[in-house]
Image (cartoon, rainbow, N blue to C red; front, side):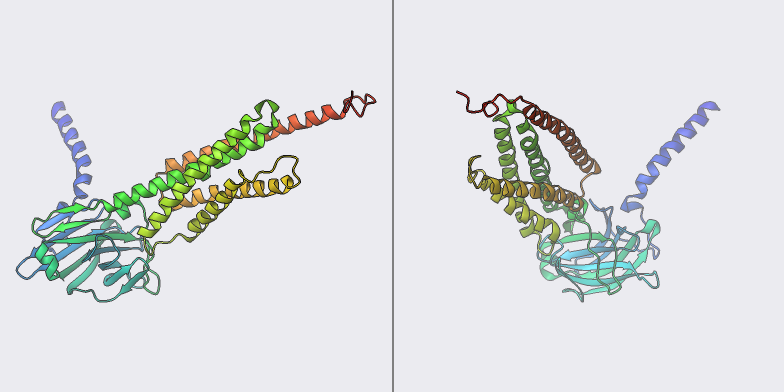
Length: 393
């Protein structure tokens, strides 16, 4: 009796473990109208699924696309791009819940670019398009599509899918995230074999964004502040002269080199992402590049200590330096909000900034003590009758 009870408990335990995984595959999904499709795919990103049948005799594609909007009142989209592999240029079916009735509806959109998403008829025939709400907040799009002749002849289509956070009262779609999963939601669908292959374009873009983020975080977010700390605090100690100067120059020149590389990758990303603009992040980046370039010239225009213009040079050098320091850290956090990496990376950077800030406060106190003691020692030196020891024979 005991062995059979143990076996039953083990079977029940494994069934509980397996059943959620099974429910997350397209093969276990059913429809309220009992529609049947010859193929189904677990799409590789955004927890999305595609059911489809293709009739080559009349080039008709029947589809059911299932996904969960990024927010409860958001939208889902499935599209064919006749000419390219991304969202721009795609002919889209987009579903969302009507804000008044709460009923799921589907409309066709021409996505000529990221900045031009127009609700209109598609470039190919679409009929029997409907949408339905499903359990767990997901939505489904159903439609029949007349596949264009050139795509039917090739036997493959470029598919794109996406999820977004909401729809405005005027029917304008709110912009979706640009996280890795969103950028990877595209691929090629083989109508003959029923197979889908992912596109590497999203992976390439994500890598470029990661490189851009790492370069700029190291440059504006860490090395520039560290170089400023070296100049402010190490120069107080006479034994550190002139080592502090060379360390300061090394940090700032290295930061500038990394910053220029990061700025270049940002320009490249911008040129490859027409219609996607992060104005604040971009404008601060341009300002940083200009300020840092002018600051680098300070190294070559630096007057000697006794020169009458040294005072004005100090004002220019320090004001530009602190402006770079503040804007750099602000822009790094703006970059985090755009790239949305794993939380641990943002936490790690916050810890680094807090550590640099804490060290700065400690060194600020120490250097003030050193300076005040030095001044106090000079002021208490006894007068020796020879101009306080100066110009003595």
